[in-house]
Image (cartoon, rainbow, N blue to C red; front, side):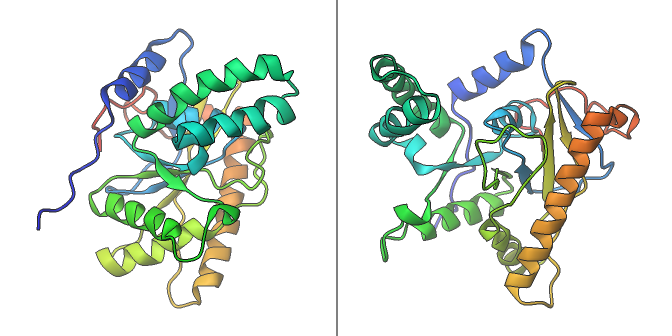
Length: 261
């Protein structure tokens, strides 16, 4: 049986990324930890009301695959999300204005996210017993990591918050670390990433790893607490401007070319 093919971003996704990196005042990627491990990793990105995932897709090396809530990958569900919640309830737009905006978003967002190789994620209310949805998210993620692909995950509970400080994090994704360790015989790095909006930078910090020898729940809780601490440390560096003189990977101030490892 042939192994699954390596995912490749679709041409429009690659073109959009290239255009974003050419805009005036473009963002930069700054690596504050000097020796990130080779191979796949999970970039744990502070959401910051879409700023985080947008910057991550534009700047992170290679073609990492984002975890995305399933409604944004299906046209009808995407329309319902934007029209029934985002534009009307959250932004307070009148329905006559929200209707065409939601229709346009539903036409553009799902194919764009699929072009980035998005892996669908389902909220608890969207999971039906026995329908395999959670298993599909897990299988796609496991296959991506086995092929050497990295993932982008924004686990903020308060994902709509634009605050620089990280609050509570969902922890389920951290079980990928134990699965990867068992299958590949090496730890999976979870790399924290925070947007410095004022400096127009995406800051990468020191990786976090699960600590074997403890119950999985304890491993996840400890890793989540350490990730939150390091995410908030990156935010503090950004706020204080101290990151400017931190050690950087050669060439790390510019977006990496497509296909970089």
